[in-house]
Image (tube, rainbow, N blue to C red; front, side, top):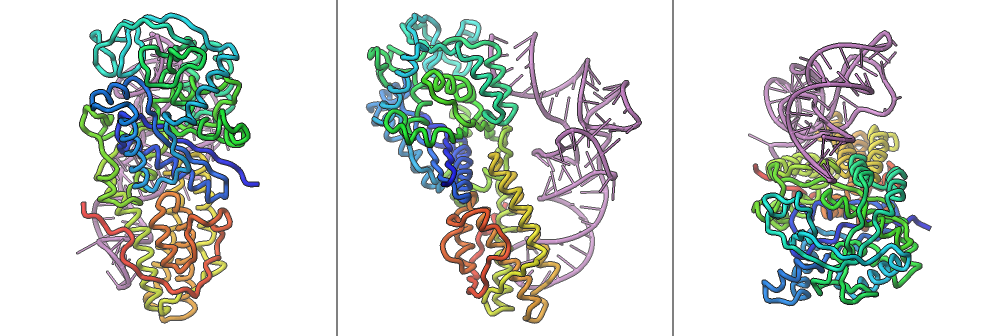
Length: 501
RNA sequence: GGCGGCGUAGCUCAGUCGGUAAGAGCACUCGGCUCAUAAUCGAGGGGUCGUCGGUUCGAGUCCGACCGCCGCCA
């Protein structure tokens, strides 16, 4: 029986359109999912859209649409973006689907039945954009500190979640070691809990665009509690207990640091309240900055995936966001850095290696691939690079993994320089070094497939191999010496044409 | 105000339990090669490892203070 691996992105709010910040998170989750498939694990990769809440209701009104129509339109844009980027999600969940209402109802009812939810009256200053209450001292010049917009005084009967009862259990959960990563982010979660948790309001009566509270239908759940539960919905919570039990222990949430509090405090506590286990792991990454500034609609500095795909291709796009920034800290995006990374790693190293090898095989071997040597100097290089690559992916560090894989490419280029097969007469010496280079390319095609699925599939084809690199299984496929030789090598056009700065 | 983090080559960063002569990629300089997408390979320059003090036979690596930057919370 193979292991299971469940990985999620946040579900994206339909008041936003997909930009490279969303894509950053999604591409990381996708590449990790693809890696785990290579490991022959049973993978379930989930993304989707968050469609309830007052903001959606109001935006729809402004557009003269029903909330559902508005959500349908924007949700479709996310699905289009992920299709463009070759995202391999197994499911796409929408919080307006019936299955989600079923799960939310079941999970919150369980928390209610367990005595963790109670009714109280709340009056406070409310920011519609945040869908959150503020203390007077939190305001800046009387305005919401985030949106710089006026707040409204609201008085509501709300249902409250007894978050304060879960401090000890949350702290114990963080202590399990790798529940929240990186470590710095876990410390933030610990800090939030240590300072004491207040119970939180989880329902609204002021709006209708949401999922009704089952025991009090005048209320709908506050959008966050609705949204988080999507992760449980998608694996059958409330409808297929067996399925849920199979997948839930393996869930890994990939999120940006802006929603750390929801995923590492509120969400595990709600799960505990319902009698379920907290997530297996939450992986928190930093922001993608543009020229040092946070990306935002108001700053007019948003960048959309399609614009970059036009210049760099899907693989160029994916590779850049996986390789350029270490997972965890904030990263800065710049077009110049993207060009440099593309030209350096993809065009000069990988693409050019394939070109030169194919050409020399054409000239010295009549285009027929020789087999690698069992005792090639590249064999130990591949062995250590594979281990480092696997470790990098295992800890959600794509940049580390790819750096390790690229070491094979560098060494293969160096081996060619040393042997200079283009100078030698055809024969065993030439065959040996070219066979080694082809085998290095075969293995790189497998290891890099999670990041650049199109290019590696093309390499696979040009090497005359059957199937695709994504269908291979690790670690077997990374073992040196499996390239059979005898195939006709296809010298094609440059895989990654250089981009002029 | 409380808690936490960061400050290592021009740039982006690695540096596990303190100990082989401080590293990688990119950039730069020089040289080789000309199979390849002016790609590639080799060599080299460049760092008082933020500052000061302490522990130690020995500290980028531990402790304290300070300077600078940042995050979370209030």
